[in-house]
Image (tube, rainbow, N blue to C red):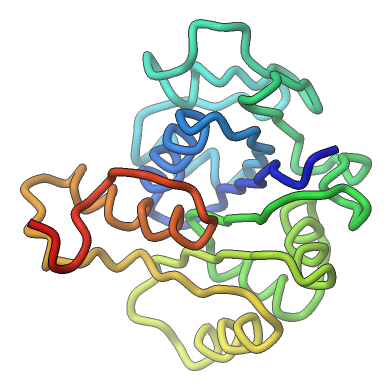
Length: 212
């Protein structure tokens, strides 16, 4: 098994357009992505994007709409579509990504709720997202947390600090404006591009500093 697979999780924080664009970008780059969505994440997806996700009978087209690949997609838990997407139920601790022996090139939680940060900071593997994150930390693999909460309490800041101290990358969903964004899509692309930079995935989502 090549250590090129990536794990993406979406939890119950505002910012689901970032997670959806990240999936589109990674799959467009030919990456195999293991996707996990929490129940609260599904609720926020419906609230922010008007897209209803059935976590027990997952269809990628429900999440990506007309941007989903016309090829057969991963549906149900553990279904593999080579070079594309593997969906895992958030309760399935038998999934490969729950084990350190399953090789990956990194994990992103986007958006990452404060509750998820707290669970990771204190080692509470209450679902597959928490467990996969714990695995990435213990195996010293790239773990990227994308919180969007504002303002943050001292408790939230301390939990993020703990995660950073043990090796996670804290990448707040704070778009830059030196790229002179002309639309909401531009702001979303900036954050997704910065995530891809951390993963070593090439992209053309924004112009870099000093680029004309």
